[in-house]
Image 1: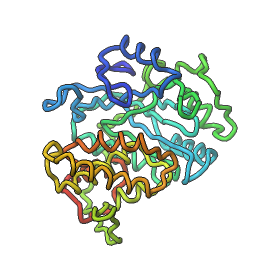
Image 2 (image 1 turned 90 degrees about the vertical axis):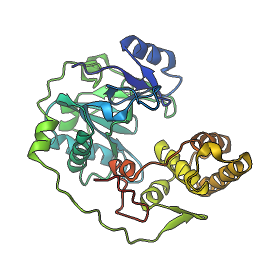
Image 3 (image 1 turned 180 degrees about the vertical axis):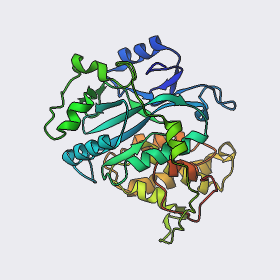
Image 4 (image 1 turned 60 degrees about the horizontal axis):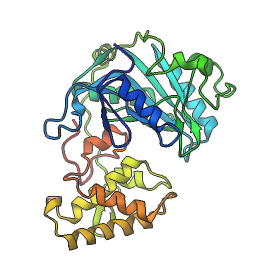
Length: 335
């Protein structure tokens, strides 16, 4: 199987990309002007209820993936040490991308898997391998987007470059990370490099490491709130950073909007009430003191994400490693 299979998604708006030519055109058109993303996985099926997008349960899972970033949990030296520690725990064909202030680690599988039953195994495996690594910022799940290697980050003004895994692992603090893509390292690309030679099989790992049914611990901490809206501990922990992830911000808006309209259909809410809900969410986000807060962009984001019927499920938060235990909002979606 090709390292870059289709169809897949490209861009933060998740446009459908059907083939290699569309993929190259997307990069050529926007590289250096915008941040360039692709879905980590390709997909087999379209969503039956929303045919303009993919059914994430049909993701063709051909790799594990970890994201490490410098920040509150440690500087770039700590990141390099954590990445090296992860690499020492992995088998098979590993590809490494330096993103500017962190790394993406791709562990290719000897064969791809498909089906919702493998989503839990993937999450279990990635959590286990990254246990105790402080600068881990996330890992793969079926709908994950990732930076396309050898493209320019317009926000950070840095290139995402492929580097040789073994050379980095042998001297993580001394290895000189290039500031621009190096042709010599193109073969290390996780999407367009040399042929996959991995020996790691997720199916065999899942068979050898069966999941144990573990009861979620009950969360006994305080219940936080945004005005009259209760905030789950998983979401509360994620928003209390100076620069939360985009998906966390979206989840906050969707959760607050759903609560404030009393779970009614978004299209049934009168304009006056919509404006009131928007203002309530805006004022709460403003109070959080996020580093990159901008009033106009925040308003746009709120208006867009208020239109969704449902907020993310408990399973959504758990797959991202954010769950703090079974709380008042538990919806039964974690099994």
